[in-house]
Image (cartoon, rainbow, N blue to C red):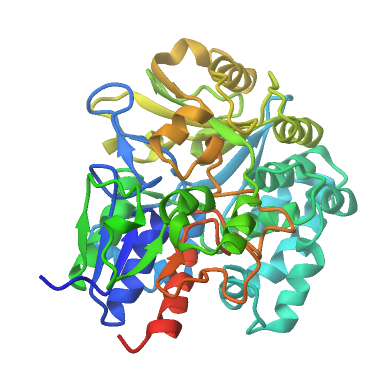
Length: 474
């Protein structure tokens, strides 16, 4: 049998995006996956009891819904069904009410009181131009297609979230809402570019929504695999590649792995200077994750929270800032910022009965072995009195346990490396094309390349374009 033109090692969203893109260009492509099923972080498993469907990592997918590459694919024809909750996001406060992000900017701003006008001024211009903005944002460093629009975005995006909040928001609700979105950066909120994450997620909430795949994140993975196979691609599971010599010399090799794994697998074929640069790559804080079965939906003090697919549990801007700074400095806080997803309220296929699932995690120091379950549950209880009594069964994963599940989560880092200002566009190293290596037949397509973490497949798409530019005559 002829060797494939390309082999993709790893079947996360970026590995599959690379494989699909090359297959669309007429290449013969094979994907190799160490687990028994493709998907990487896009998998859904019975983590507690049989029949209860828990997303092992990714759960809510604003970036997948906004991704120019994913939107170009007929995913719905291959079984994907998006579910859009009534509200993309809720952020409960200690007075018993919650800040609600509605799909409408106008309705969202009405909840913010003194910050109503500031919120609209910040987000409306970006939402109006989102279709022109998204392809420039989710790309490596380049001359933008819409330079004036990118300049408008960059005026605020380059700032720290703390500075943007101080300059734009006066009330506690507006400050908390933006802080919760910016904290998805998994960096201290006084770091530059953390405002970019908050802006992008806020715009997505209004422009494309924060949906979930019916049946779990595995459904997104399955649809991508189906598209790939429809183009003649093949997938081999239960095969862990430890040495590059296991792969055929004739095939181009594209790795959906982080720099540390690339060094372990392909190190013998990479120049020493390049390896030294890969070794300097910095990983960020990890996460501790909790999955549970509940006998009823979370009893939030503000019932509107029940209509949100995602709930940010962290209190005030100041509390969230402290939580993120602590994780960065290697400190475990007993009052962490917690991200909660409520899939079963909107998707009855997640449980075999009338019970509900909980998906939640908090940020912890890199490489943490500490189980933060009690701290996570206490934070939810704070805004949902009686919540702990609803827990029927529970399963937790520390940062190191998540790394054991998926080797790409080095130290529990789900973003493939910290997204600091010095490492956003130069990940994994500064090169004209960051997806290439000094070896013509070795490429990297993971979230350790631009534009970084998130289930959007754009790292893989851009990596495939780099492969085609170098080997388009195959």
